[in-house]
Image (tube, rainbow, N blue to C red; front, top):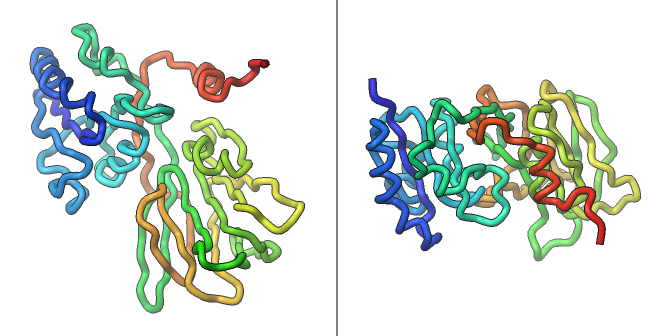
Length: 275
């Protein structure tokens, strides 16, 4: 049976256009089917958040944000995602286009790792909304408001009320994103843990808290009122309270075989370099 590889691309990256036809032709030479090539901004993908044909792999051409968009459509079907970097940081897009169109590129030579995903349930009145986040769940105050007070419970046990601008609940994958900018730790993706990082807290105790992946985190404002939150930096939503735990699915992310995480940390963060 022929292997089917779908393509999802960011239309705002002009360099991608000149490679699409080449990529599809090179995949066909290898006997791989390409049932679709969709834009991350097109109605075929955005409105349905699913794909028109069954696929075995998804090639995502863009930046890390494009991979985050793809996560919603691949998660439950457990489709491995091969990110091709046309962005800046490239934490999730671990391949370059020259590698993928190379005649020697072979799907059997990639490594697929499992990345922890956060499952989120938001209560809003009598409604219950669910969602997933590969990087983080961010609760934050609107710009027109002053500091807010947050009540956080971990496995039913309350932490002291926190005053500040917000709270970041991140995965190991998301530890190098917004959480890192707020003072969080870098966590290797093989570690199945969550991280709680505070945004501009009005306290001297500002160290992040790291929890095991069996933990359940509940968060609401004090006194109770609507809170603003986003999943992986996308659309801001409102709810009365959030419950966050490990999702029932892991995200399947491809990387070159033999890739060194230590080398990535050194390259991206100039770890150990002086001057």
